[in-house]
Every structure is written in C-alpha cells, then in structure tokens.
Amino acid sequence: SQQGEEDPQALSIQEGENATMNCSYKTSINNLQWYRQNSGRGLVHLILIRSNEREKHSGRLRVTLDTSKKSSSLLITASRAADTASYFCATYDSNYQLIWGAGTKLIIKP
Amino acid sequence: KAGVTQTPRYLIKTRGQQVTLSCSPISGHRSVSWYQQTPGQGLQFLFEYFSETQRNKGNFPGRFSGRQFSNSRSEMNVSTLELGDSALYLCASSLEAASGNTIYFGEGSWLTVV
Image (cartoon, rainbow over all chains, first blue to last red; front, side, top):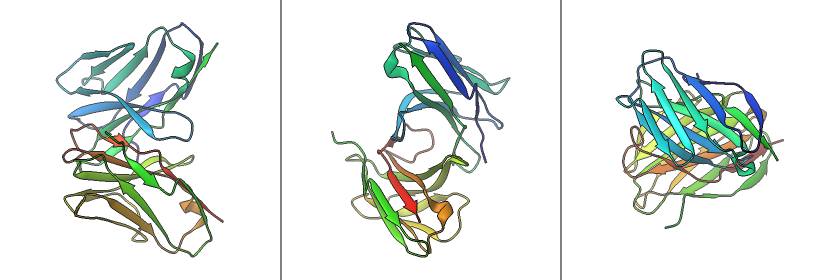
C-alpha cells in the first residue's frame, strides 16, 4: 500500500525555473523523507523533516510539512538539467515500514 | 567511505529458478533493508534486518526471504521465480534501526525473469 502520494505525477519545466512537488500521506508520522532517483538507479536521500518541523532547507531545496493537512512539499529553486529525476516522499507507517509515494517525474528542459 | 554495494547489478533468470542477491552496507551500519521497485507497484518494503535479526517484514509471500550476517552484509533470496518478480531490488543501510534514521541506498539489482 502507498502511504505517500505525490503530485503532479510528471512535471516539465525550463532550466532556471522553480519546481514544486507535493506529497500527501494518510497516517500520523514521526518524520517524512524525500528522495531522488535518477533513471534506473538507486535512491539518493535529499532531506528528512521531523513532525515538529514546519520547514527545512538544504541548498536549493526547501521542504515544508503541514501535519494538519498531512501534506509536504518539495521546492527546487533555480532548476538545473541535472535535477531531472524522479522524486519520492516516504514515511514510516505504524509497523515501522517505510511506505513510498508513486513519485513525481521531473524533467528540466535546457 | 564506500557506499552500499549490491551485486549482481543485472541478472536474467528463468521462471521457477531461485535467485540470491547480495548487499554490503556502509561500514559501521547495522541495519539493512530491502525494497522492490516495479513500474506497476512502485517501491515496496520487503524486510529489514538489524544485528542479524529480521526486524520487520513487508507484505510479500514466503518465497522472498533474507538474512544478515555478523558483518552486517545481507542477502535476499527469491525462490520459484515468477514473471512478476521482475523488478529493481534495492538495498539500503542505516547506522541504527531504519525508522527515524536516514537510509542510504545501493544502485540496485535489476532482475529479469523470463
């Protein structure tokens, strides 16, 4: 089962623009994580935001968390071609299993 | 520090065969978890091992099994392979139990069942 669900499923923007992806989840969480996956490769951890945090920054990444709406967003500013990848959110369910969203496929056009 | 290493990277098996995939975690990491990724089902948790004990198991049939050795290296085995087992199998490691900690992924093992 999927706990996190991202939208949009696919996003295509011009290099230099900002990209925003959203994730919704179903149950209460301790933290929410965002990962990036280049085509057919392993996942790279981007950022972890805890349930008592509302916003977190890491370089060009900004993550927000709204526990009342059970949603999170990932903003990538000043996008680059190298940002082309799929982005996933993941949360732990009550059985301590990491549950993944379907992912957002981001394409940065040069 | 070396990352998570998975072997083999690519393999092709025939229906009914069995397969063993290997994962070497980051040095010092005691938790290893496994995930299956398919276009249809997305990413799904298989199991987690911590200090040689299976700590958690996802909703997969008993054909999927795993183990962890004293050096934290882990293997997963799939017996009686089915076409639907074709997937990218990802291994991840973390310093302590996965929940609440950052997990680091290997590049994955691509399994094709024909």
